[in-house]
Length: 205
Image 1 (tube, rainbow, N blue to C red):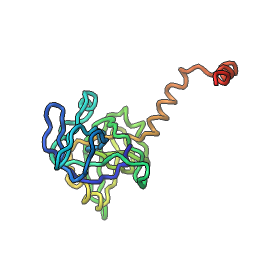
Image 2: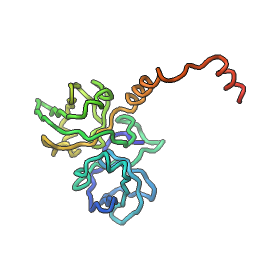
Image 3: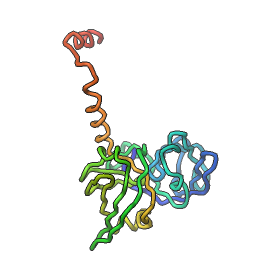
């Protein structure tokens, strides 16, 4: 589990044979979960200057390979005694979006990000979303896109400052929005429990 607060801008040393090698100041341990650009991966080897991670078939089928080079956002999995900020992030990317408009405001910058329409039901105005591992608040939702307003501090401390029109981004939608949508879609297909069913459950304990 993650929070969407970036702890370091790391560097990709190499990516080949499904192994991602990262140069980082973070002292990882074998088996650690680490989010790279919002993707939860497992440390399989530790080096003096970083570590290696392995990408599964499922992960590679969802994310864009352009996110596996250059500088990347890094967040280690949160600990139980960590201060919780941001929002609950799993590191499970839903889809890849694309920056289609950037507008400079007085003291912030608006980014319009386009996504496939089926994901918009999980993208809620004033709700949370994760973009390349960064916890952000959604301002507006449109027919095929949504708007984010990024403050100067975030532009400076993350890779958002280098985003251009056409930049691809990893998107993880809100966990609770996905759960609620799944429950509502499947509620009608589930059989209602009778008192006999409840009695049988109670008697089994």
